[in-house]
Length: 103
Image 1 (cartoon, rainbow, N blue to C red):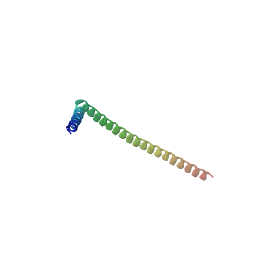
Image 2: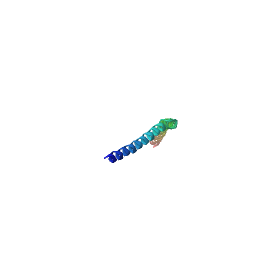
Image 3: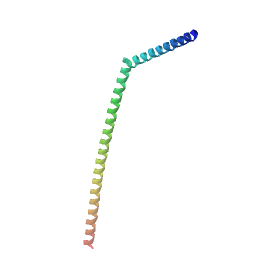
Image 4: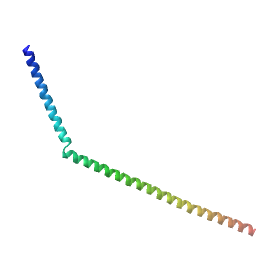
């Protein structure tokens, strides 16, 4: 019976040592996670994300500006084409009237 208690006591000691080692490992891991290296990485990542957002915003505004310029150019071309058609129609009417007068 005593042998059983000694074996159980030794087993408990081994388990306690393992738990203590695991706890020390977790403490080391926590220290690494809270350390300056991780803070620097987090700051760098946040700055990169902020820069990426700024660049995306610039690209978006440039696309909108280019779209507006394209639409303005198309409108100008349409107005020019319309004026040319009006001139052609009026010249055609004038020549038709002139032709009828001479007949």
